[in-house]
Length: 401
Image 1 (cartoon, rainbow, N blue to C red):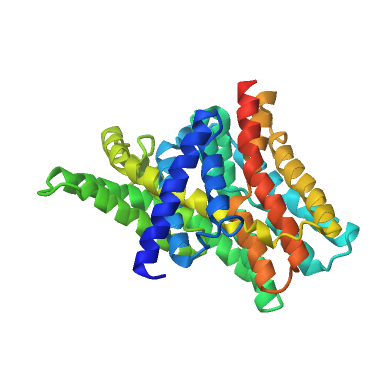
Image 2: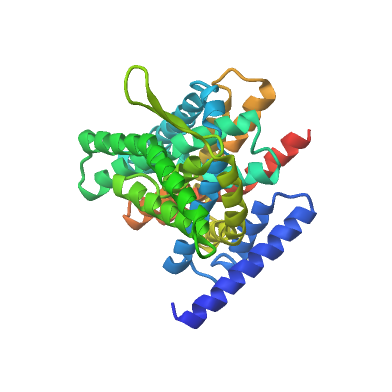
């Protein structure tokens, strides 16, 4: 993209995101719906002003990584730990049910081949943590008990989704899948999520010390952003989604996160949370999050090319209807697999439904490799679009009740 075209496209995306999010908020609609609608309007689906360009995708990725950094800063691990195995149960149910039922419907009911059925099932497993968190934030529910379970479950769901994608990618490229490689990827991701917040915590203490003696302004923000980017790169290196790096760095700067290193039987080195540092950093990062995170949601809308859907095909609508039922019921059931008040169960189930960018990655890989034909890809686009756009309305209606 030429530099002047980049400037114009960026301006169009930012203006459209702001206009539509403001309009949506004034009508009592979650702002994220306005941003997704803006992407559909200016993207290939309607006006065609913006294409899913690599440069814009990079800016969108920065936006979602910063948003997950904020989520990490707001996450209270002790509160999450009190949930016990609930996030794990929600994540596993929300992963296995859509995958299993989606595969069965595709293979046995529609007679599709095994690899195609696996890709369709994999697409239905996704949960877009970015969209889920943004909706809960728009509704003022991000600090609720059910939101803590949803955040933990969505992070785990993302990890399971990446492992499934790695497995299917091996299947496509090498025509065989190695469970040894899958196990290694899982182990690397697990070690990354356990060790990274601790390492980042040590780095945050050093950054706080440097900031106290800084001769020029902006050191805290610059060093914190550098840490986010480094850990996002490390996440990619070990096979995890880049957004996990932002989440891990956010945990380290959280006013709730601390840990002890046992030096012997009776002595321990304690690393305490720093609420003052967390508050200062949050004030400095928030304007960047407000500027960049809408880019991500606009790009999700831009990536939904609804012109590619053959609206007159009976097979497309039949497949889309079946998969939509599987996609909604599979995730909604995840909320009911744990012991919580009924209204918490429904809120958790609804929060796990959005597919967003993760579902698009699955479907686009299958389509680009010739595993999904144009009609199957179109049906999945319909399912992804509806499961991305509907949950914010459903959650708002549910909480208003």
